Image 1 (cartoon, helix red, strand yellow):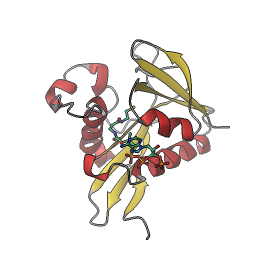
Image 2 (image 1 turned 90 degrees about the vertical axis):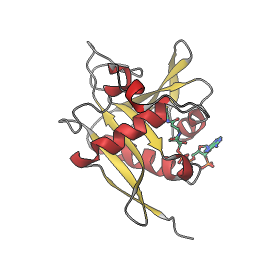
Image 3 (image 1 turned 45 degrees about the horizontal axis):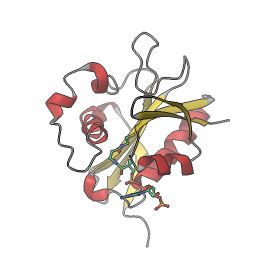
Image 4 (image 1 turned 135 degrees about the vertical axis):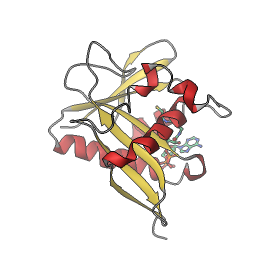
Length: 164
Ligand SMILES: CC(C)(COP(=O)(O)OP(=O)(O)OC[C@H]1O[C@@H](n2cnc3c(N)ncnc32)[C@H](O)[C@@H]1OP(=O)(O)O)[C@@H](O)C(=O)NCCC(=O)NCCS
């Protein structure tokens, strides 16, 4: 059966939806229910979407048959002076990914991740990074897409994929 979702490039108007995906990522543990206002209160999480879409931002959005967004993956370059959880160095974008709960485990996340990494490579980036909390099954997905742990922190791992 053909997949019941499509993937398109993210646009400026996707900012609010991508914010929802940041909240999903922050609440990845089952039963994790930190409300949006709490997740977005500090810069820890909001830095991944604030001011979307800035020069250098790029992403993809998965949509269901009705054109409703169901998942998103994007990258952003965060500065050394205000780094993200997965910061590895100047010139290495950091990615974020989230899929709406009812759509998980249907291949949406993998499709988004693949499109985003292809795009980052085509843009000339040599590497892309991310941060994942230990215990999140997303690590399995990342490993199978060529990411490897480069740094282990307090409860979190930084993973990097070589794009070229
Ligand atoms: C992590 C996430 C983005 C993955 O997207 P997804 O659409 O659910 O993933 P996919 O269906 O493409 O699955 C990819 C792989 O993940 C693994 N996986 C998926 N669902 C799983 C589950 N419930 N338990 C264990 N592994 C699972 C499998 O290894 C799967 O590989 P397969 O294709 O060989 O079956 C999504 O589940 C999500 O939004 N989770 C909450 C937010 C989050 O954790 N974001 C990442 C923060 S670092």
